[in-house]
Image (tube, rainbow, N blue to C red; front, side, top):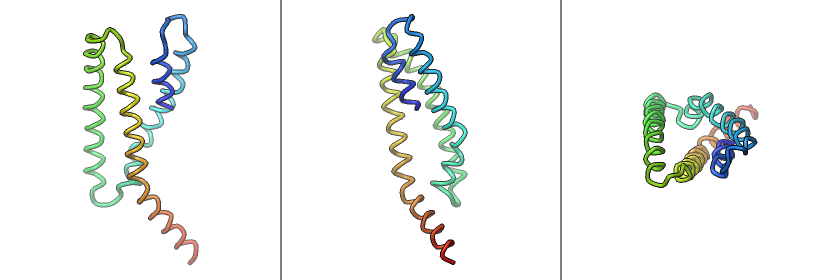
Length: 123
């Protein structure tokens, strides 16, 4: 959903296209807002165990640094190109990469969790 919101901004060319702003607000808001809420739960599901606190801490710091650098780089890219298109494209690319990384890292954990559930149900 976040990618749909960023995509709406990427194709926005004219201030009269207010419907694209509504698409952005709704999809980006729901997508990014839901990530913020489930971030620690998702991290706990994938990386449960002794290292959970460290992993969550590093991830939280990385999100803060990325947010700060993203804003600054967005301005730099605008100054260099006269457009936010590069910033939005980079944002979409990094969102896609992060989704793929979460999905790939979750596969073993989810399958182990499913196996434990099946074993509990058989008892």
